Image (cartoon, rainbow over all chains, first blue to last red; front, side):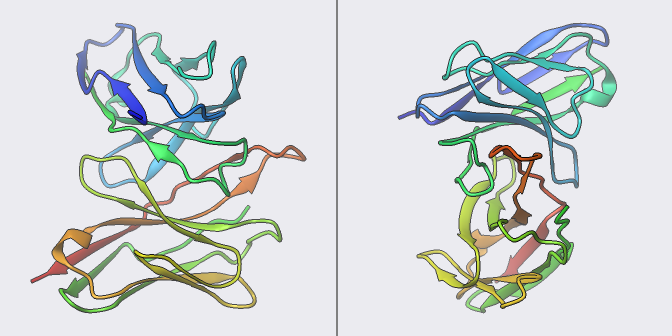
Length: 115
Length: 114
């Protein structure tokens, strides 16, 4: 199993550009989520999904969109990038709908810089 | 909401036992306590989880007192490779559903010295 994969590993954008961060898992996990991590800070939840077709907002959803058309993929879209979105983005997944009791598997992260 | 409070940083030396305490005064009856470890430039990794008393695995032990308002992660005989950020999490539910949000705090940065 590849586990949780994220692409790209690094990305530089200009203000106003759009892009999609890709996340995929091959463990047939129901729950997937996106976090961002800023220097010296913990992870903040952006969006999460409890299954295909079902998504919801986390702590910091503004400026980001998600969709979940398949169990395996959970892309994160930045519609109009802003410098405040410069961060490291982590995708995670777990087996069931209860992340508080299920082990979360994290991807390697995408380092995004917005100029 | 069960907010967690843990020390920002800790120093230790190789071979010592390290105890990191996390406070969660508002923990709910059905909440579990989970600890994650994060190395630089990597995603967090699950270490251990517990509900009450003591849990032990091949990596660490987790001590939870009867009132569950705090928990202590114990790392036996740390090595340089244990230098990382350690997060204490308490899961919470959204309304009456079985889903939930995992909220990470700032974590504890453990520096192990030779």
